[in-house]
Length: 337
Image (cartoon, rainbow, N blue to C red; front, side, top):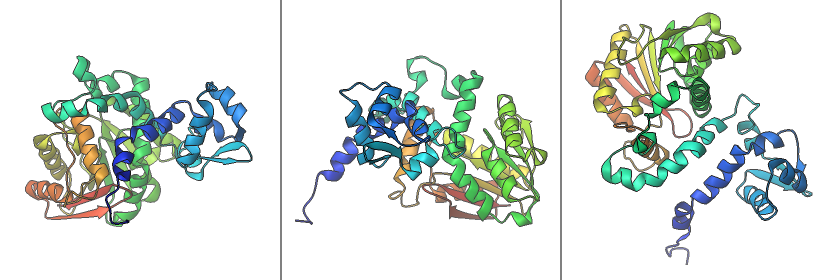
């Protein structure tokens, strides 16, 4: 019987929005942040979260069954993972990206079929609103929240880049599209001999500077305002682009890589990282679905394989290229001039 086809995986994926929304609602209500103070009884949680008697026990026990909560002697508590990553008061919080998924992406993905057939974005622009980046950069509070969310989802890879790349042979770096600056901060923390630049639109400057100051590396990091479409990328030994290229079409990708080539000296490096799709396009499902998310969010963006990126780098003039896995679905593509 074990060799007979089973519908289990089909149903799990087809109804995957059930567990997704259970988790996203728990994040929205800050349940895990509240439980970080310690275990609580069912009655306490029901009252503090404002849960209706009809739904409360099923909701909490579903979180237990899904592995996001523990239950013992009638009290509920966080798991080690939810306590570390979903408590808003911890620097390891990654819930910001889940908050964005809940408030924005969850609804937009309902129009995936339309996107697949038209090739058009299905976010705010679908109903005549401003683009994603216009919307974000027009609201400082929303921008800060978005950039913090990006730090949360990228933090593990940022730490891996800071540790794995052979930084001893370099003195300076520039993070193009730096956002909050977590990549620059992690590199500076792990490599005291380095000084770096965060390069992004002017609105990002105060957010970057506050974050670098809070992490104790402001003396070795500085912010340079500018658009990588309208201005040269600042010169440095190493240029980094994290979760940047997939926002744009093929012509913009090649142009940005060429600008990075122009910004580094002989022997200098470009590091591109995101959820790089495996060359066979059959294993990194997250990377492939991230590419579909770019379909939803952008006019021309898409994710790509390591071989794709290596080809663009060689076309720009980089003499050596390689791909190295970071953490989870993320890898970095390195080009040496």
